[in-house]
Length: 80
Image (cartoon, rainbow, N blue to C red):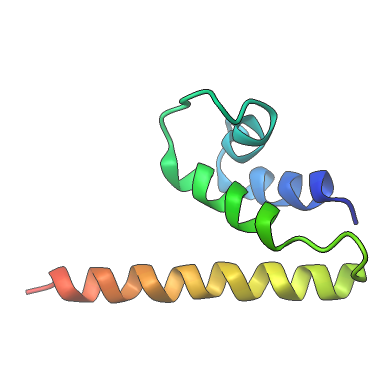
């Protein structure tokens, strides 16, 4: 699996506008969705081109799960 394939997989389910891929293709542009930018950066920074597809998907799952956990902690801090 290539980085582009991994990012495309994320972009396909993120939204209908392909925002994750837009940030990858035009990283200096401001597309108005910093969460998509975050997803693209996290996946790109942790991608290992030498890893198996299974290991790449496991790492992507791990980093996205960590992000989810951090966001859930922030949400919990705001709940009344």
